[in-house]
Image (cartoon, rainbow, N blue to C red; front, side, top):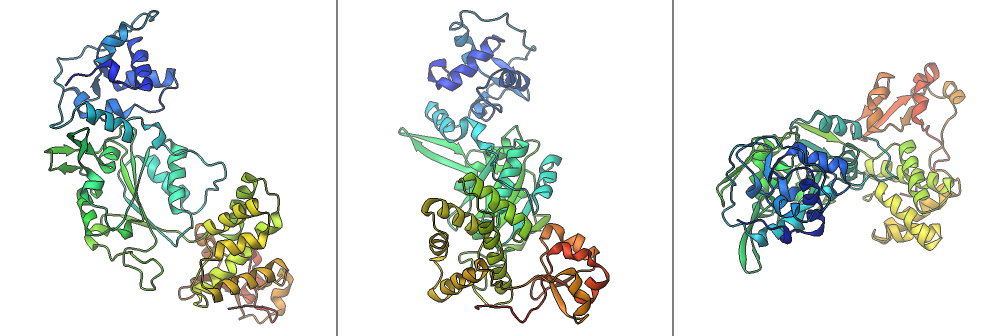
Length: 465
């Protein structure tokens, strides 16, 4: 296979020119690539059209064949004194069975320029929930498949992407569907310009990424048994591409994260239609499962505050009312009073709609229009009560606790990230209602749990459901 300087893209030629200014040796090691990256702004990670192209690999691990350097030398008129490259043994360039120049072009289009695979940091993002746990897992740079489950719209996928953005790790996000199969995941033959060309799939690309690829399998519980091809990948052993007779070994730092709305047991209530009962042997290859609930009231207020700032809205009261409104609906959902829920994502959507239409009720109505008429009407009525300060639940002042029945149940607003602190302070978990609570008597003697916004029962409580 012949590599030609003229076949490179403008950006690729710039990188080769920079390499040629440093060495005329066509075999360069990874450190040379990193030196050029640090000295220029052409790429932020070693370009995959070099390190991911199997034809450029040499017999020496970490050394890549870039013969275009020899052609680039003649195009440079003021090259600095070349730096001697490490002596390299004679090289045998491995050739993929069906790869050609058309295949190289495909590789460039589908991932040759890898910088964009590192997610952009979102200025409006608020770290919460399992953000620190995911960060610790990725910082460890060990293979540790992790299953993240929770209701829709609570930030599971964004959390993983933002951890990758913070740590500058390439994230290969694959949205799983019922049709996803081995060809989609591992790769297959494609017809390019009349030629049959093998193209690696996202799983293989993530495994071989020298920067430590993070494979994000989004909505994994929508997949069929076709995703069982990932069994050996989830064991960290690599995978055999039987169609081309090639064994793929994962690079250091590679790991797998999966998100789902269920725990792989399907959805009996029909809320997440299409989710499947997953193979137990497949699920068992995830050593840890992280359950993510919706954010606490204080955290959700921060999220909405930043979302408002991003669209030039200054209305703290509106954000506070939205959070209270969503919290009440979620409690009603947990108790079986309603069949729908307001997610954090939907609250952010309401903020954006408010910025566009400049009317709160219009924004809310548009965001909940997909619900049936009775639910929509109930949610709208509830919001008017919250916004009108006819609050659905009233917070009792600390001085009131001693005057109440000491056995009166007091609901607490405890986010998942604070559950251990609440438990250590004496809070109890109601598994049926999925809420934390305490008693008025406990608060009368120890008010530290008031930090979790205790809600006392009240005769004035209004609930439209």
